[in-house]
Image (cartoon, rainbow, N blue to C red):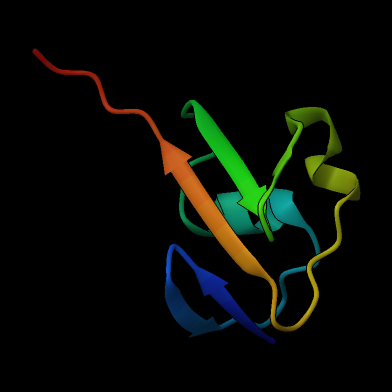
Length: 66
């Protein structure tokens, strides 16, 4: 399945939902905001939000520093 993630078109297999995508990028233990086609997806809905061909997804994670 082709998805556009953070502006870059990528090919994925074996991803079913947002939780799978976040895990793929090893972000599951980080503070992450997921936006699909302009809509922020609540973390409680990640498991239930199925991925579909052509979705445009933004993964935003926060990095501490000083």
